[in-house]
Length: 154
Image (cartoon, rainbow, N blue to C red; front, side, top):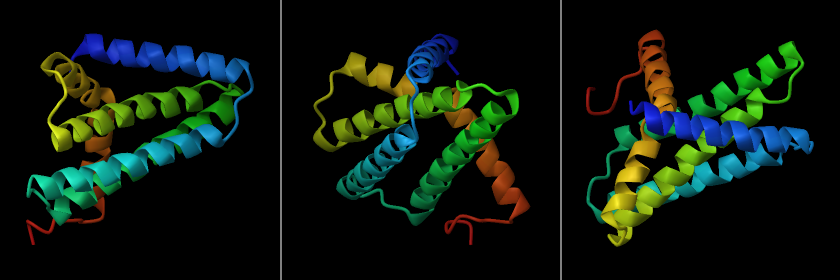
């Protein structure tokens, strides 16, 4: 993980969530995140079809990752309730939102092939990191606990 990129993403999420919390945000931000997840999924499907890399196991893994992201946000909602704050949930929403936007831009660039190389590097760094680490570790635990296997392994 690139600690500088993670620091920038966490700082951006903290600043945005502070502002949102200060101005009394509502549940609409979770809907925006879900919309970004849907757009990312559609662009991922288009990219995989265009590059002839379609695998159901990759699609299932991506879907499980998005569910895990929403579960993390649910835990942050619970922590906000326990500690009587209104900050953590928005930080999680905006953090994963930044990751989704980076993934959308990356998928779009692979569909069209017209993203400058420097921007592509920044996007790739933004896509990988703490969020993906947490999601991949949780997916691994989920697969071991529920004995879920990829179609490629069956």
